[in-house]
Image (cartoon, rainbow, N blue to C red; front, side, top):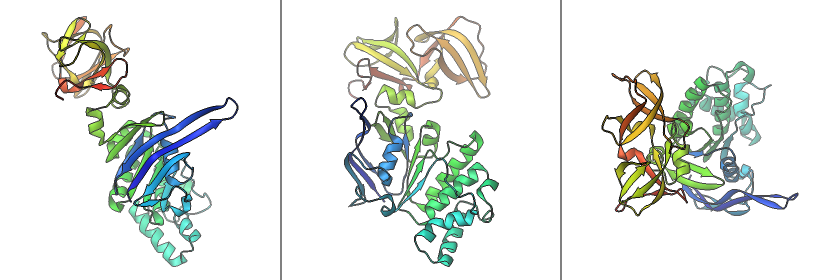
Length: 359
């Protein structure tokens, strides 16, 4: 099922102070058939509202929701052929696993034998066939989440919608369960939209991510492309662990400067800019182009994180990730060269990405 959102807008009005908030603001996007899409952004960016508009749980103020060639904007959630999984699972505590999975099928008047066979089928898909008679309180959090997914898949939806499905799990279960979601999506081929504020989750399992801010889509692409080629400073800062290092800089005579040091050639008119440098961009070199003040070092096995400062940095601490092999320090400052593909330039006023002439 391909999903097209046309000019999709949801406005909430506050009658007390007569103000309007655009939770989703003229969103235009095409979600391809059979892909897992990560809908990503900070709290309040509009990602869950977008999911509810797609599901039919909320009605848009403007715009359209189209499934394949069918406009479903005015259809209720029960008429859209969707499966919806919330972060709280919403399992019935008095029912067994198999009863929970069968529940939507019984409501749809499936014959009991057929409903049972279908429930067993999806239980096997989510690897819960050995737990059919257990109650939800006898399951781990990850198992409960898989019951909720199985219940959503039981009625063979065209679209699977997941709203922060891993937020109630501990770190170990989050990792395992997101791998399970990826596996299940690949096996079923169902178009899936996965809402999360966790960039690592979105980047690890999504075929494509949509990054939102203040109800507006900032960028949509494959996760690695968004990381490598962010369209603005917000996107660059949101993606990446550790986060990108940001400096105030300038372009003069086709060179990028941080302070008095020219760090790279860059064919562009003279202007004030932000310079973003990914932590993995740094190369220790006594004749390097950028001098940073030493703070401390964190050894992380294979890699080492050098913590530094610079008067032009917007980050309190600049992290430089390098190999830990034969690294030693004892100086107050250290010089680096830079991998230029990991250095990103942004307009100081608009914060939009700037490319060198000819890019």
